[in-house]
Amino acid sequence: PLYGVVAVLIYAAQGRHGERWRALIELILHPIPLLGSGRRDLALARLAMALEALISAGVTIIEAWQLAATVSGSPALRRTVHAWLPDVRAGQTPAEALHASGRFPDLFANQYTTGEVSGKLDSVLTRLHQYYREEGTRKLHAVAQWTPRFIYLIVALLIAWRIISFYTGYFKQVQDAGGF
Image 1 (cartoon, rainbow, N blue to C red):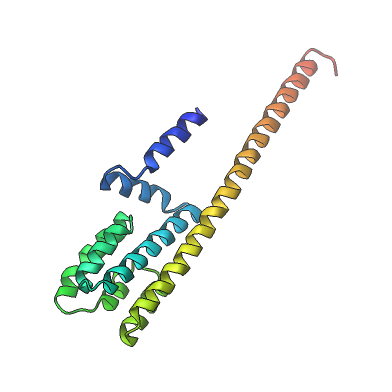
Image 2: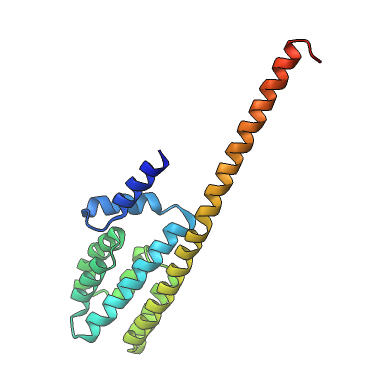
């Protein structure tokens, strides 16, 4: 059964599935402490990297945000960006939309605002990419280290429970037989 669960998880995590499937997986993994936040950090890193590359290539800010949100691989980020794009087209700055959405971490939104105001958006996006890539990698590395330990602990506890259950039953039978 464990191999079956692992096979289903590997199949589910593959990137060739549709948007709804990826959104479901993202929703399921979101509350898991290191795994959910690590995936979000890597999605933000991809968003920052794509945004910096597109802006440096001369793509308009609105198109750059649309494309970068798609490149991030996060259906939630893509939906958030597409939801506030009409406001940006109407004159709101992307920095204001970032803060209003509440979907982006304060660090990302504040740094983006600083880069937008100072005119150094490209260097800020590069730093954001590096920071979120390192954080996401660190968190996923921790998950990879602790998952086998956690499984080992569960197996050890199950074995201990079975041993204690066996001896409890054994001593109960001996006591019922009048041995003690």
